[in-house]
Image 1 (spheres, rainbow, N blue to C red):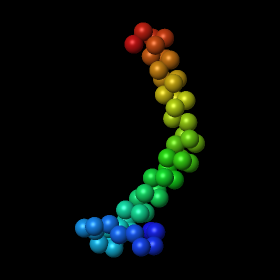
Image 2: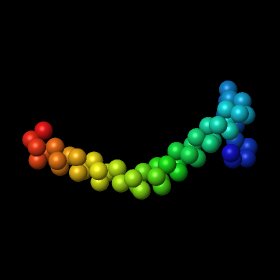
Image 3: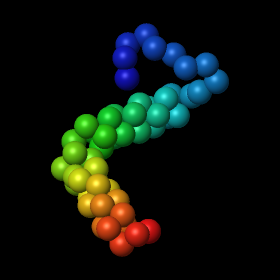
Length: 54
């Protein structure tokens, strides 16, 4: 967590958990998703559906 940063209405454990979740989400979206090649898979499914007339 950044020094001096406060979130109104949240206690320290909540702030720490939120910071952890932000970090995990950033890692997931910048590293994991590109490795899974989800966009490539979605494109293949789309093309297969179009070819099948769906």
